[in-house]
Image 1: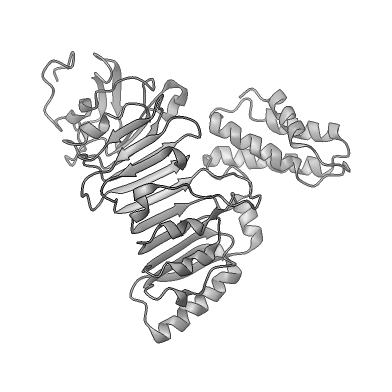
Image 2: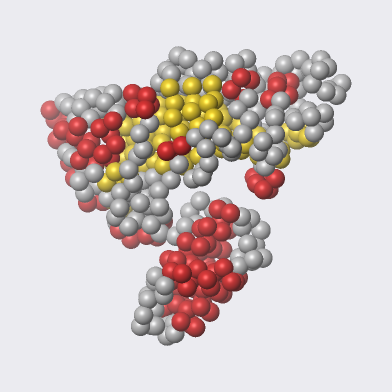
Length: 407
């Protein structure tokens, strides 16, 4: 194979490399990176060095990337490689690249120093996932033209995002909500033209701050709606008369869900991992409805859960951790909780939380997200039962945590 020395020389033919191996590429300059292709791996992650092993190729956020270096690579079956791209940075040049080379799935975490307009109007994208940090500049996206299969997903700080153009086939929104369900609903920000979509998914954590469904009044054209996690104001569903498909997943509270017969066009319905009291009522409603009008689509109500299950499965902030780390974290949490149950003084509580904190000082894989999860676990521990006779202030528990941790 003749190596490409710079961007001005002839490139390898498109899709000419299908074998595993190590390949020098001119990602941000001549031979700036070595691409390692491993058997059965169809994804590639690009991002700043702070991501560590979470990025396959380290590139600083403001670096200009030559996306066409990947044109030479293909899967063993001959389709473009990588199939799935994950990129953290400011270079939106992949939208221009996708005019000629389709992207099956792109996840972009933009790091923007100024408000940015990204033009994907002529891009051939099957799925685009955008993750927006709580701080930073605004992103405006010009949507792909008339791609009936295009799926858009936006997570994080949705107030930083806007879009215009042809509506995507489906839209998924996962706003950043508080981990603590303090009863104050999260209100979805306005999203302009995206309110015209017909297929919407809203995602939240099961025990997080609830998202208010008051936002549904802005979506007049919905025919399909999928809800994941904790929501309130479910009575707003009764106003979605066009719905033909409704899916409810991992929802611990369905108390104000309207009866299914308030949705006259509903033909498909799924309730999966939902609270058991309303779940049993939904099963009966499905049977009653079938007697008057048969269901034409898929219907199921399954995995009904009692209140204890939600606390066990989602009450601790380790559910997204790798299994090995999650097991160690839960074991340490159990020990700390047992110690706090016997604590008779603030000194005893400090010792329990300190012991929990230092347990992770020697573990690999504790980075920003994991540190935040451990901080949340310390808060939970400080609120657990003890014999001290006075509350443990959150600020005090946080000081103990910060003083003991090396991560």
